[in-house]
Image (cartoon, rainbow, N blue to C red; front, side, top):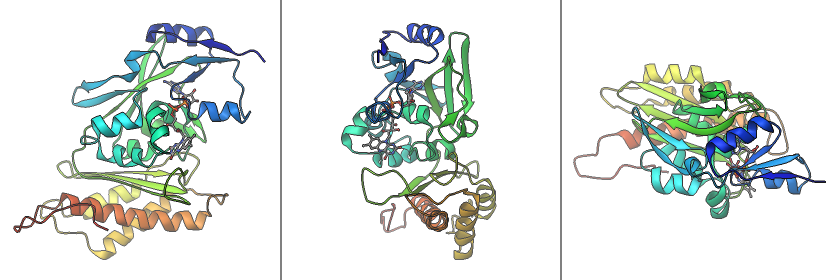
Length: 297
Ligand SMILES: Cc1cc2nc3c(=O)[nH]c(=O)nc-3n(C[C@H](O)[C@H](O)[C@H](O)COP(=O)(O)OP(=O)(O)OC[C@H]3O[C@@H](n4cnc5c(N)ncnc54)[C@H](O)[C@@H]3O)c2cc1C
């Protein structure tokens, strides 16, 4: 079967091609696209190779936010932005292997919109924005509205993902993932937490435990009211436990080959408790002896 291959050199050319061939499948790192094609799950009539577009590989700042091109790889995100986006960096380190992280992009993760995509929970927790564009214009969609169903999103047929915008961390951020082994594994479920002590806000993201990546809104509201933002006393055991329960209750998991719904809820409660304890400890002022803070257990 013939497959057309388009390789634009500029962003505007890519938008022109997408408008003329809405069915053309964009390819960035190809770590999802090539698997689909090789396994014959999907055979697009045309491929739109985005790898020559330098704009997609750039990042910068805009009104206090980081604007990160859809073609920035996980490796670059960890190396160049890890200090400013610790939650994204922890999640990125769990993606595939070094080879996958060298090719794979957050734009591609968003394009696939799998409920198990590891970039999604920290994007939700940090209230990130996805920038999409077509020949008719550019629009910005909150990550919280981007995912509309399993492997479905708010993009129109003629749109491409240009970038995502995210605030540099304003406090501790954590991510935790359960898989059937330590590396090269799709999440059985995952959880991200971002704390903003100044605004007294907590953001959450749940992966692989529902038809889309999810937020745990009730858990966010509960913990925002319970944390001792002023005195920085650690949250009590009952508060931490309740936070875990509310995160588990927000999930909409199913039984599948990777795990049961019951196991996913259990694991989410554990990860939520751990992430909260790690994050709070990380944010605690150093003891007078100068002892370190950190992730702990
Ligand atoms: C061995 C292996 C291990 C993996 N491990 C993980 C893992 O641990 N965690 C995880 O989350 N994922 C994992 N993946 C999946 C994959 O690596 C990620 O989803 C990655 O982020 C995809 O990025 P990419 O640039 O390669 O996307 P591509 O494969 O190029 O594209 C993915 C999708 O996004 C679309 N797309 C790409 N760029 C754009 C754009 N700019 N605008 C619109 N649509 C676009 C494509 O059309 C396609 O539908 C793994 C894959 C493999 C092969």
